[in-house]
Image (tube, rainbow, N blue to C red; front, side, top):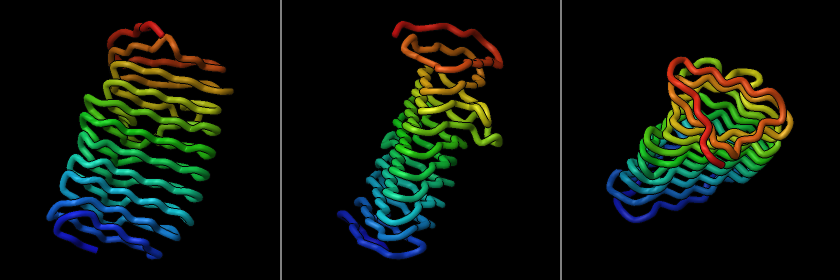
Amino acid sequence: LSGSAGLLTARTAVTDLYADMSGGGGITVNEDNGITLVSVSTVNSPVTVVDAGGSITATSVSSGSGLVTLQADTGNITTQSISAGTGGVTLTADLGDIVAAGISAPGGTVTITAAAGDITAGSISAAGGTVDISATAGSIDGDGLTNPNITATTADLSAGTALGAVEPILTSLANLTLNTGTGDASVIEADNLAINGASSVAGNLTLELTTGSLTQSAA
């Protein structure tokens, strides 16, 4: 699919998607089955993909400074490369898991929500921006491969069960709020870190700083 201006909107039942709006304008795709976003790009315009019947794999998605939104109603979401700038990235899985890697949104907001499943954080970078990750009924872990897993000025991590219990979450942050419903939390920070006083961990909390100091801010 390609276009030169305006908005490209498509209802699809495909395995692989190539879509280019290099001339300007956004992309909106409603997919009936699972889909791989092999190469999807816009110039400073939004990309929205909603999958009603399967999983989404984002191999390469670029939006300049447009918002990238991926929503899987029943399946999983796996990202390998998303570049969104200040537009930010929103990933939502209603039933499945999310593996978020290769995300770059400097100065933007990255919001990742799994209502029923677990979340694995690979490389999620919003330098100068915000990262919000919520696994409402599940857990959040690092991928055990990438360092850091999360780069931002501020991050809010909330899990129904545990944070970093399988693999600690490696961060490069200034401010962190973290909450667990039933489990432990384990975070390794690169340097100075302020923990929000509103944080609540049901189990044991392990915080390790490679260098710098740890402070607690007001709730």
